[in-house]
Amino acid sequence: MQKKDQTSTNLCEFKPSVEKESDRKVIALRSDNNSEYVPNEFKKFCAVEGMKREFTTPHNPQQNGVVERKNKSIVWETRVMLHDQGLPLHLWANACNTTVYFHNKSPHQMLGKRLDVGHFRIFGSSVYWHVTKDARKKLEPTMELGICGVH
Image 1 (cartoon, rainbow, N blue to C red):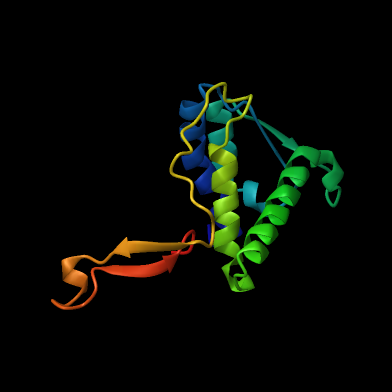
Image 2: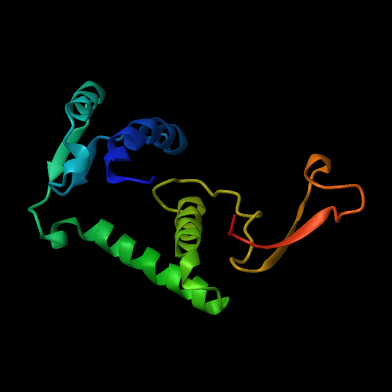
């Protein structure tokens, strides 16, 4: 997501996949009173889907403690991944996306099932990827060195 105004659209697309994967229905959305959830089309979407909208008091993050704690964990784990591998700070978005991916794929009591995590690799470790024939000349290498988690 590049801009805050994409939040409503992304949530509308994300909701069905969450419900399918968890076998549970999203019944409520809690947010602050910022403008990303205000557009009329989003209000209509919530009404049609039967989603209750809950708003916290402005400038009072304590009312949304679970989310604030999750965000704190994500930032902390992102910082650890970058510093542990000695990577530059401009890779923070890649590290943050990797952290969230790990959280989403990690076993959790609410999901009720164990997910396959066999494909996990250490963020920042060296990896090789295949260079296709159309992307190289005849005598150029068929593999290139990269960093896991950085695209």
